[in-house]
Image (cartoon, rainbow, N blue to C red):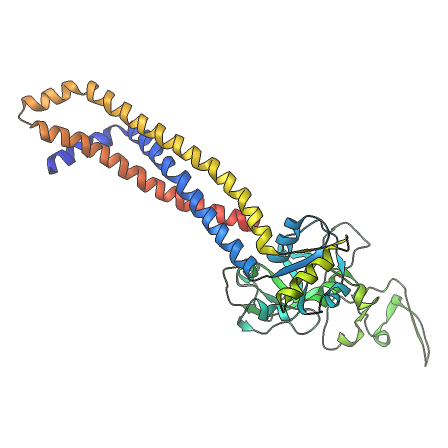
Length: 386
């Protein structure tokens, strides 16, 4: 048997093209169904788990899928904002958590949240503290690695419109902590207080101390008044010295938010709240688990197409293996007779051919495992990016 195995391996080594073709066919047959199954199973588990912990989400009327992915996965959406008053309007029999989306730091989403969000998602700190002051930020575990930031660092938010001179200046955010990894979308976000998102909007701003201004920005000064240039730039960093100068322009109830996570205290409160919100026509309340099931039904239809493709690939591969085995047996009949003439038994010859096939299948399976791992990794990264 050792001799047959040695001869089989030498035959594979001396025919690399045939070996590579068969191994690739076997690997592809394995990779497509297994990677699809793993990706869909992981996607399904993540979606259902996050949706199950979020009883209801309310926001502007529009696509329920956009509202779902915006509130649960912090994806940028085309939905309109809603006034902050919606948060208080929904508190009859419910607890609420406002969300404000739309800003990023080097592509990482910045999420304005109510302080209750951290307890709701059971987010623990790896180090530092939670944001309690205007301009504070706490990083998800993956976001901290991607941005290469830690507690004590400072960073500016991205400008949505780089060439819009009327847009508010980027705000210098102070990183006060890093969250422990959770394996969820919270790892990939930067969290700030919802009022800090209004600071990035320019709806909250502060000015430098007028008494300290000198030079061309100072137009006049006497014992009682200081007249400053109207183009004096607003300060874009909250410090202990400047914190008192920051103020809100407008009513708090009119400030924009993207969505509200609603936590009903009873089934009755959930039903009444959802009906009341959807009856307005310009608001939408969804139950994430219901929307996820609708989305997964579509995903499973796509998976069924991949499963059918996998069956076709499997049958084709088996046919290819059978054809090549038959042709090889015919082509190598003279080789088999020569081996028989020099004393090699028929059983050994048969074992040699079977071992060749086994080696090729083993190489194909190993290659398929590597390709499957790579496809699943790329697929997970792609899903998180999308």
